[in-house]
Length: 383
Ligand SMILES: *Cc1c(COP(=O)(O)O)cnc(C)c1O
Image 1 (spheres, protein in one colour):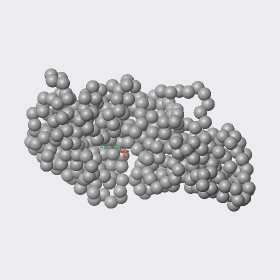
Image 2 (cartoon, helix red, strand yellow):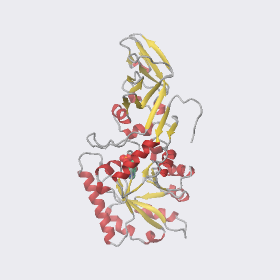
Image 3 (cartoon, helix red, strand yellow):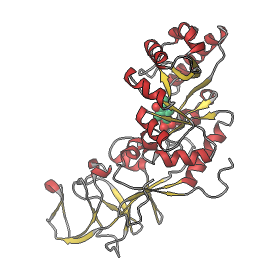
Image 4 (spheres, protein in one colour):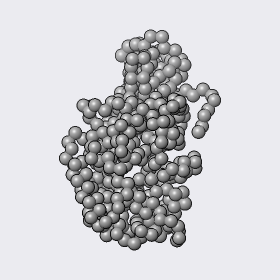
């Protein structure tokens, strides 16, 4: 990991102790299931290698990424555990999957044949997961295709069916009907396969929302992503705030100046002062993932108070109105996501200001922002 010794005006810090607590919550909810920890998209912006290493110490030994390159990056960092590539892949990538011992999710019959062709002759059967389409409208074999496919000889010799999965489209909705229909379709498919005498491998369907809300979806493996990072997409009424955000995003005031009533701030003069105002300049912008939709809308924490973003967010700078915050100085900390005193801003807040979901806020924190880690407390590895 990049561990700079110099001063970092803008940085993310990730509390691995809080990760351990969130993971413990997954364990409590699904005590009989194995865990496939979802670390795609740089572990939702938290740093895939560091998060993976911490979870390994917490006894997780299966990791899911979206792309072949994400899997290769983990291998190159020395991760030897199972790595499942859940995203869409094409035959041109199959040789790389095999070369790096990454586990593919196969979701088409022709893909199964093409992948089997890439397994070297004489090698031991290669573990694969098969995805079944039950109502996500995305990737997967139809339930009807399954028996014919899995009964084929390839599966006994070249490939080893390690996992059978589906993905839920609506588990975070308060209306359960679509999820229940998907789970019923999945269950029927499993039963048909069992009736044909096929031993079921790892069976998995549950993302974070389903882990919390649909005990029947937990099967032998669960796939938590967002809840490990301390967020959930369930409606507020769900009593699941037992997870807490593990990421803090902070920056440092780089400049302060006063403007007069009628003066404007930033591109296109979107903000015009209605009074004499004190403006703080933060060295963070949309190139770091602080979205331009936060122009004149976002809020940051300075001096334990909420202070508004004024004017357009720039590529590398953002301006804040600190007129009402006493004692502000250059070098003081500003919190973009996190806590300061009694106040708190979460990725969910940013998401509501820019009309998206916390996932996108976290994933968007750019590679220019260095990540630092608060280590796991001693003893937290015994789960
Ligand atoms: C991203 C992803 C998950 C994790 O979802 P969360 O809502 O973050 O828990 C699980 N399964 C699949 C197939 C995914 O793509």
